[in-house]
Image (cartoon, rainbow, N blue to C red):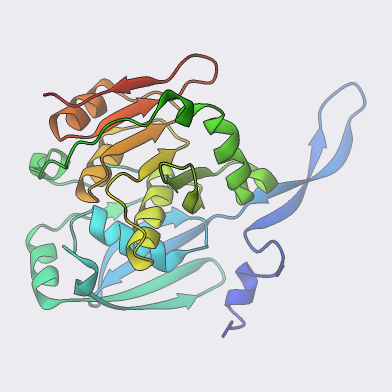
Length: 273
């Protein structure tokens, strides 16, 4: 049931995640026009009554985001440790009360990491080097798909991103099988948030396939690779270039990292053998 507070965000049943705003077009004949913009809200996440993080997010698929965030940040080890999510929609923010298993909560308190800030925040608030460079179990390396799999991939992803088509300003995280069927797509203003939403959706809907491929529209940083490792993804494709450190970690942990440039051929960074 949609509450009155939720309707502040969902005020347009057909396009609940975008708003139209007027802006002055600066050219030889200045004029005011209306443009579509993506929504952005603050999300406060509390585990067992204690605040853990405040993130700026696109206000859709919030449950997927919280599950994915909890898994990819090693707060819970599996979805069974997340008992429930209660969302409270306010005018300027969403408050999420998350109930997790006592063992997971004890580990969270022991390894307290406070995140505060922005949708682009990856490692802000980390209190120890071990939190930035954790020990992770390698994934099972798999073979690359045929070269033809990558042909027209950018257009395929662009057609899949419904919110980006309306407003721009959002990143996409897409799960694709070897036949190029889109299994899931999640979008958010934050590249980390979009990936967490996708991880949550794959977990909730039991979509995981050993040879499934994740495609991210953003550049690839270290924490995105760490999320892929924790989620057991063997192939990670990005539409913008990876960093050297992300390639190093992907290679070390069995992940094949593929960069698909706009005009040049795909570049695959394969694991160390």
